[in-house]
Image (cartoon, rainbow, N blue to C red; front, side, top):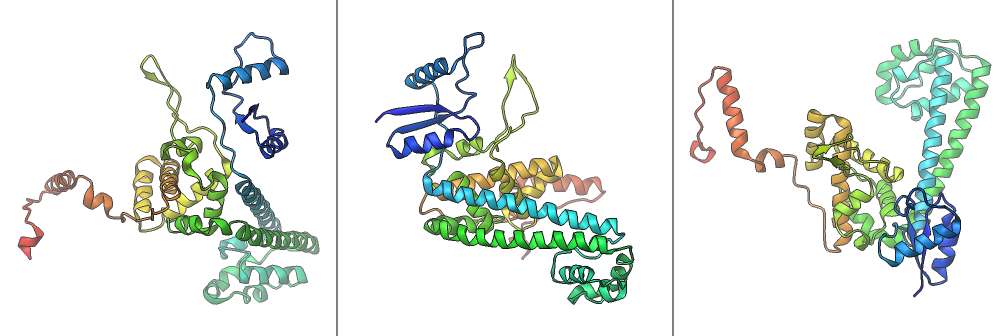
Length: 360
């Protein structure tokens, strides 16, 4: 088989790569940083091609990860969905800014102004209702306890000009909702062949079905491309970089810039799992207390990625939660006992330990 090596440049490599791949060539896409020529040498397209051939022939480079066709199709859908969600979020922020311009601060009393009650209030504003009491009475269920606050929030200067803009923004949000729903249906159809992998990932705390689809679309289901879980974490840039010279560490050990779509979903999963009573949730809280939430997000995101690698690389592997008490009961209990005794003695108590079985 003939091997073709090409340098990744923006999205221009895609049509050529796909044509050569379909023609049966062994096609390698390599990082431009990995094949950079020595400084001071002449640079032309022909010289670059010769250099690529030389470094590939001598096994001095590795191909970049390019998923198979079915995963690429799924990736196009999930990335477009993420982009549309971002556009919808921006439009919702414009709505809130418009209301604030009219001296209306709904977000003080309504956690989601696009919920059932919030949408009814927005529709009434567009229809011409301006009475704060009437608008506040549209609150439902538990929100009715905030009617006095809502009445005060709706006491503003909402005009027909604001109503025109609000109608346009709400219409655009509804259109985006419809587009996202259509994408969700298409993603569900395209991910059907990977139902087993989806079911495995769905067992991991913090990973929703949408997040599982994004993870599969970004890393695929064939983990043979990544020899170890560490290789996958390094590829995703969820591993600290090491820069050392003359025995001194340099830089801030940052992870670098990886796949933004994968990083976003792993970060969201880490924040979500941090609110659960699980091992990963306790790990998030322990790190956040000591080193801050940003480092906790990266650390737990990496842990989730390691779990994903093990689940996808072994057909028989299933997720098993170690429990929120893992650190308290299994990691150095003698040290925790000594620490507790020392703290009690510092408060003026005399401590005598007795086994629980003997006390019973």
